[in-house]
Length: 362
Image (cartoon, rainbow, N blue to C red; front, side, top):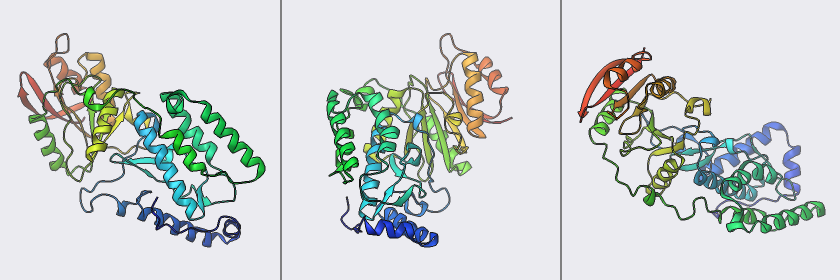
């Protein structure tokens, strides 16, 4: 943690702040928030991303759309925020996964109202942290440190004894971090192994998609990836917020790790329900949905109709590619299904009987 964060007393100082008039407490909380902003731990529009027309904003997601790797990064980030707040005499009173969002592939805390003066003793928000972050991680990954679950129960016993004694446990946040860091989200797995099979390049589709994004001056784009995509992802346009919805959890995890390692602009999410707008009701409608490449669009008539209903709620315009498949709907059937939900602005041949369609809400 950056040593430039100042350290305040936690005993008499906390009591004095709690007794201070509400305007004074609000002013101090805002000052604490600004300190966290300066260290890149919380979200502030002016501190993240480019400025001006088409600038990236914060994209919303639901924890149920996160893969294990995102859960782990979010948990470690919350501990980092709490450590910074402890040095300022403040705390996260009730840390919740819903108060963490991702700017590109970097977690940020977004709730100023969760900040409270820190009382003496143990971290009051520990149980909420365990319920909101550790339990989902343990459920997905198993016991910490490869099965040594007894360490977790021993630590919990020590924490309980410290609370009864009224003393602050030593290195409580460090102990929690030691529980999270050894968790192996995917043993023996890497995004490079996952993408060992060759994916056909998204050449013309990528060019047409980027041209449409620029024509619309799109600020937010949703890209749809099927359960077994056969084409590469569309490269995001600079200055445009970009979310990729993967029907495959493994695909979402591989994309997330790759984007995080390369500092990419896209945020991969796992669309486990198949309906992103229902999974996150606060999600903003995008300017454009892109579902291009082999394997991204359902081939069957019923599945295609359900898919069209979903993307219709996601954005007023969509780029959807028809790819001939054995046993799938032909072009006439494909067009007839989409005409029930959209009007076609244009259709472009992309080779091999494939066609990219620009759709607008009917």
